[in-house]
Length: 299
Image 1 (cartoon, helix red, strand yellow):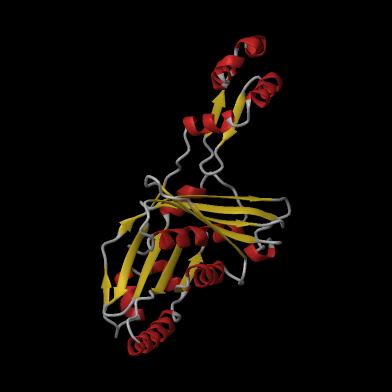
Image 2 (cartoon, one colour):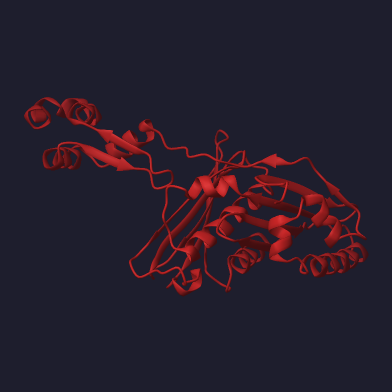
């Protein structure tokens, strides 16, 4: 097995505007999905999206969360991954009956959209959301098209998931050229490094230690590898956040559910934690001035 599980490592090609990231998720991937029984094709797609989220998060200077979503009107309804700037990752999927283990992601997508959301936690920072059509026949291609169109940054991404581990590599050419001669050199360097990176295999990506992999791919390049960052599964759900979500339903809806079911139960889609609110709990969710008139319904 590899010895770089559950890490993200940044690297740069010295004296060039080209940088990269490598990620390998094993425990993070398994913990994120261990409560969710899903068809093999969707499990692999979600693993690739998790690897991509970590690598793209590592390119941002933002404190907060990056959310990647694939939405569709086909058998697949939703794939969503959230990765924080500390590499806490959670993921889930929604799909209709009829999805089998033999389906791949793009067979299940109809009128699909790819949505990327940046949710900064800094004060006064604005959230950002970009929506693009699903262009390409792989998650890598979709993300590369998005980066080129929306960010105008040359980006190449390799992703794989075998159902137990997920891994990825990203390289980017930053627009830092100063003159025409440098720009020409940068394009040549980018093309050479892109060509070398494209020789990578899924087996290498999943199983080789980072240093071995970079040496094998770029043995004639001057590569600097930075210290690894740990990734982990972590769900940010809480009883407080669920309570706030329930309050948004409004008193009338809450009272109706209590009268019909006697309690309110909410499952977190990401970690499957069950939040249960009995009649007394539910009464505390109601806006104060309406509690008195409905007391017979909640006792």
